[in-house]
Length: 492
Image (tube, rainbow, N blue to C red; front, side, top):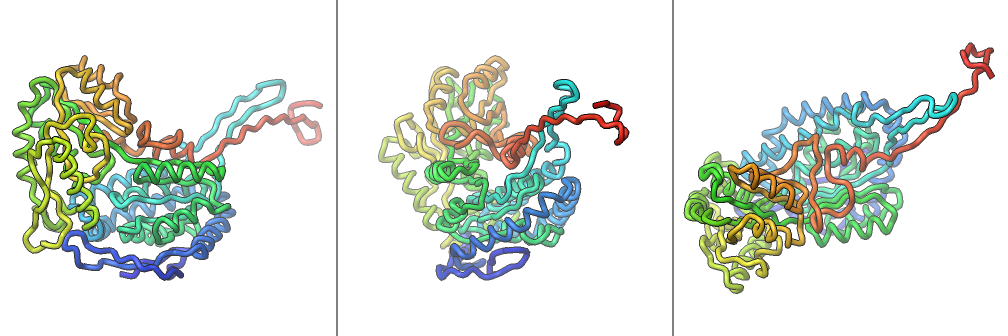
């Protein structure tokens, strides 16, 4: 598959020379697609198309904009399985994970389609004699977003539907590691009736995104990815007086109390830590066992051993590969780092092979015991199926362990005690909290984002924060002098 740019409603080949091949991580061989990188000229053309389209799109009544989104949502649902299949091939997810990712993205489209009520401003009549005060929301102009490889279909749907529903136009840069599903989604929105230039797509790596961030006609930048890049995007964007919404990495803790429901807790830990091969910012990567909650450890290890690795298109597969051979090495290196630092390898996922996919980028579920807060595996984001296990005596000690992290994305507790749950909810310093929930990712009508080095900027992704991010407020104070000739009831 040739993966192209979408500029002003037309698919076109990039003008760069560097070629990116999309290798299926399951077999490590099949080229699912390829593209050349976009140059500054390509970026200029995409931004120019978006700038031109903004003049008419921003003036289109919001209800009409949202009718187009409703139609695009229907097309997405009709094509869900087809997109999910390509998502499995380019990313390595299971089919269930791919379909789930798309459904979570579609939820944001549903949210964005309610923009007529979400963009409403305020009015106070009579703030003085014959004087009214109003606050209205207006779109920013051309905005852009860059997406990570771990959710290459969902993250674009976090960004551009809300932005264009608000009246902006958008330039999207998909992940260079797996851009197929995002490109297919853009085509669906094109077919769904988006006018030319409202949604544009440029393919490429970091240099392409730098060109977008620095472009003088881009008003706002949304980014999801690793913390070092997120911090860089934030600093460079704000230096250029742009709005920036930049989500970074995570090191999420899952705290288990002695009174937690054994069966449900083990199930949640497995899903949270090893779902999507651990490559998600909401994955629980540090397990903190409080008191005699360590009685669950053997059950957790056994459940992890039973996870079936394989091709995500096989309905029996429970976990697919990581994104690439390079990322596999990174994850395995971290396992060795943990061992070298004194961690006990309770379950080793290195060196696993899957029959028929011997060159695939597979890392099996891994548990590291006797982990301490000073170890790198306890502090740094591994982004793979590696769970570090820690122990402590009290809930407050567990909360303190989690709060020492430089990240503050999410954290969960499993307990039957309302008192413990409340202590955790109040004391934990993260943006998203789970109580007897392994993955506390919010629905589309809330907002997604963490604290500390997990979020740069004041506003989070999708939900009400996104409406705030993609619009600017205008305050109007107006007075009308009555005139008898016009039939006004007010006299001069």
